[in-house]
Image (tube, rainbow, N blue to C red):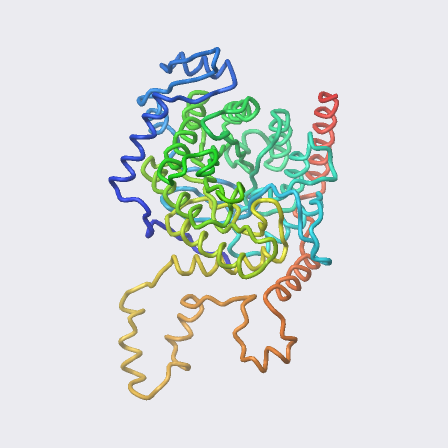
Length: 487
């Protein structure tokens, strides 16, 4: 089953005044500290629109009015489309969707359980697995394959995803050339440029380098995608105590400034570009010097960022459901559940990294995807809350059954039990004796069996043969062009 549209917003890390104070501090940073932008053309664009620029330092001081003008003029709603339109998602108004994330370079092998390099076949299999999951609602390209040239790896990833996933697809690319190739492939699937404009089957992620720096490649990718009017995510990833202040409030200000600088650029390049406010903020472990994925502070930062995005009325891409555990175990369970719940309850729209990732962002696990789908189903059920009306209050049926009776045979029970209760596919609720008779399998074993069964029966032919042939031709042509150019 597909979950109904579920909205968050019940959990508020910040008070209304604290949101406003964070906003004011952000404007001060952008205007007085500024942002480094490694592209002269975009610096000139900012200068022409009122920003102060030091071309030698490649630094832009962005005035408050320019920030707020971009925020006001950016779309309030962004639609991410899928090959099958029933899986389209609209990012707006605290709607919550969970999905995959990456790009992991390793995979836990399904047969051996050992970590190995990710390959292109994993992208295909993870896409097919995503199709079968009820609560994983989009496909953020999850792994970076090692068996294709690095210069065109993202092209191959998008090709595999567009060929095999029926849900919205997006991810990052490493070069500007890959943007063109990816859009050409999406155009083939959509049926033409105009059709792709109406129904964007792809989106792109571009990243700010903390603190307050736009890398030349990523900012040029931002500009190119904006000109094409394809949805683009502005992702900021400061580490509190490392590349961001040690205080969570300070890191939130920096993250907000970095993300809003990208929002400004998208709207100056092409007014109306569908831009998604993004954050992947977390902490650095002060003892180890490591990036931390499963920290409760990561949940706090991303939940607070959701409040900021809601203040600006911008759709938000956030992270939740992550873990630092190396295997599907208890640590993975509690870190994933807690952070997914926090960020979902806060009303973040596009919550990536929530299914399958282990070991920070380094390793993907097939069986963890199945377990995570169950975690996300429970999170979404909890967020849906309790519906209270005359029928659900059940006074009539309580009166009918009376003292000492039971509700098993009542029509009211059969009417509501399917929608009121969450039914796990992996969690085992049987009595111990029955559990032992059926093999005494734990959740990891059950999920591994489910993965194998799902992939065994997965439908591979998801696009017509002529479109598949054209898609393959475009991939080969674009990959050859990029590889020749890189020599």
